[in-house]
Each structure stands twice: as structure tokens, then as C-alpha cells.
Length: 339
Image (cartoon, rainbow, N blue to C red; front, side, top):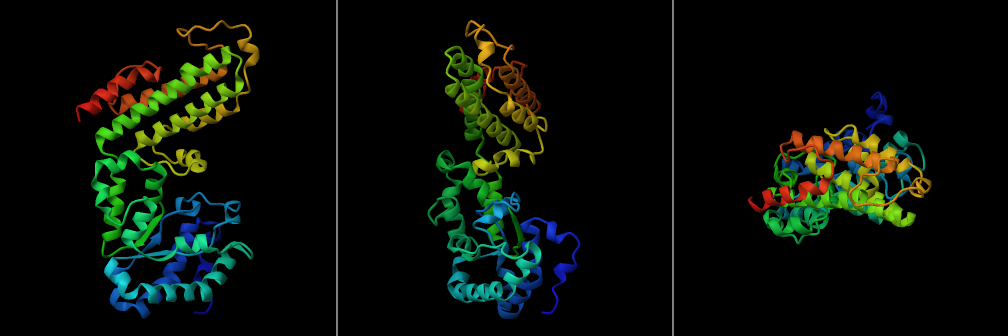
């Protein structure tokens, strides 16, 4: 095809993998489909969705040391997969071998791609039910998505993986309709129970048990209490934003992109950087009725709780300014019971 136009696109080399993948698809993938599978061109959904930090837009040079390569996904109905799946997949792999390696090397440099079976299974041709079934740990019967019981055991990261990335083209709309169903978020009753559960975990870890563990001179258990509170705070934030948290190592990065609680990431980072407070607790006498603001860990946890309380008030989920999050658990569970 001659000199590739992507090299002329300003800033593409510094763009996300999703942007690079879309440019590659538009320059090479779309013409291939148009030429070799014209009667199916408007029936093939194309994009970059699924497992891998690049699908979330979190990848960087460090993350490209494993399970990384240039490639896109094509999703077919079961009938179309039966008819053209093998031929389309063969054409796709031929395209990657002939153009993809050179394209990727020109963008990311030599030795920047590591093809293996894991990444190959995440790209190329798939049937729609198989993709969602594997991603969501469901059987191919996707009707379970409308079953409320599914949401009880679904891991949030599975749901996040099913709706991440971008769909470049979907004329038929089948793939996107399922994607939109998942993006519609949890059923309201389960949502309220889940929010109440995370409020309990926040309070249980940082507001109740952290001071008890410090009073017992158990720094390891105290650290675990802090960690539980950090995780619960992030889960609460995602719930309030009605977005699914990704795999744990990317949860904080995803937090930075949420449209709400913009002050929360800085407070969480502040909390992680506070050193142990053993000396302060040498002179404190424990009481379950006291908030130990002498300890900067507790002060920061209360600041975090205040941020969450204000957002829940803004969304009319609760009323009040009490920062002990456990106090809102009965309120939310009562609302859930009435749904």
C-alpha cells in the first residue's frame, strides 16, 4: 500500500493504543474487509474491547513488556461466524503478518511487541456470544444478563472488561446492544445493597478497627484496616459514578477519570503516604466513642468520608453530614428492601 499515512498523522506515536489500533484498522483492516468480504462488511462489528490494559487506555511503555501487540477485534453473529469465521480470521492474521508488525514497529519502535497465545486469543475474529460469555464467565446463553441473580456473583472487573475500549464500527448493532445493556449498570435494589456493603467495609476497616489495632500495638493488622478502607472508598466512588472498577492494579488510575469526587484521589494518595503512628498511640487510651484526630491517618480517613458523604447527599441517596459511614447502612438497605 506504499508509505503508510499514519506516519504523517501528528502525534499518533504518542497516542493511546486504542487510537493507534483504530488508525491501523481504518488504513488496512477496513479495506481488507471491503475487498474480501464485501457482502458482510455491514455485519462485522470491529473495535478494541476486552482484556489488557490497552483496552482501558492505561497502557504505557512499561505495560508493553508482556501480552502486548497490535491488533483489533471483529465480532460476528453465530451464523456469520459459522459461514466466514475461519476465512476472516485467516485474512486477519495474514494482514497482521504482512502489515501489522511493520506498522507497530514504526509507532512503538523495534522489539516493542510480544506476540503470544494469550494476546492472540484476545484479538481477531470471535462470535459475539462467545466473547461476552468468556468475558463475563457466562454460558453462551446471554439471557442470563437480564437475570438479577447474575449480578450478585459477577465480578465488577468482568463487567468493566466487557464495556471498555472502543467499538469502531457496528452497523448491525448486535454487539453494541449487549454492551449498552451492561453499561446500564446494576439493578437498583442490588446497587443499593452493594453501596451499603462498601460503606460498612469502609467504616469497619478505617473508622472502627484501625484505632483498635493501633491501641493493641498491631501495625500489620492496622495496615490491613487502612487498605480495606482505601479499597472500599474507591469502590464507593465507582458505584456513585455508576461505572465498573477495572482489575485492582488499575483501579486508582481509573478513579482519576471519574466525573465525580475529583478530590478523592489526592486524599487516598495522602493516606498511603502517612508513616506509622506508633509514637502517637503510646500516649492514647482507646475508647470506641472517640475519633482520634491526633492520628493523621484517622484525620485523613475522616476527610475521605466527608467527600463521600457530600457526594451521596448530592445524589439524594442520604441526608446528613455524619462522617461515620456505617450510620447510613440501615438507610440504604431499607431503600433497597423497598425497591
